[in-house]
Image 1 (tube, helix red, strand yellow):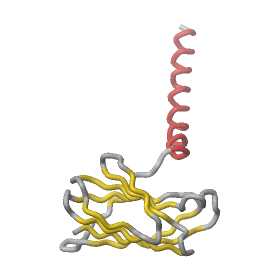
Image 2: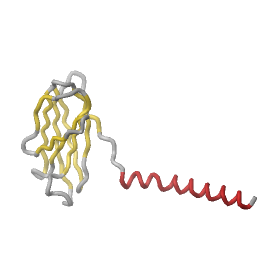
Image 3: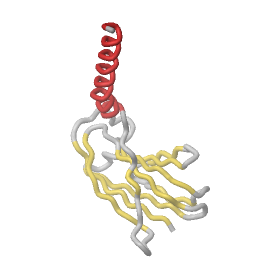
Image 4: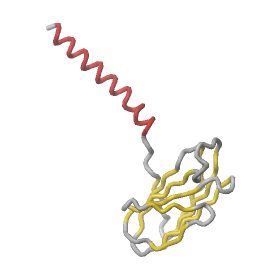
Length: 138
């Protein structure tokens, strides 16, 4: 009887620890879901103005159809303090510099993911940068 009580007690303690520790593990290493960019009815573009601190990345997703033209323009303050990269559902990455933006015809129908982050070589910098992400799909 005493052995059974110990087994139940240990199981209860393990379950309580899991309930307490699981959210911390998700917070420490998890990545937030990307923010879906949606266009207002009849619109074909959207602009997002945000700021991020340190090496935090901002993730966005938008749906588009094969043959549509995607145009992305990113400006930041301080100048050149951010860059972006975008991926299709096929995980093919397309890194782009802040000065040039991107404009191209999309090869497939599906979701496209845009990540705004510090440019290569600027990782580890402290402080906040503000950016404006303009996305057009036609």
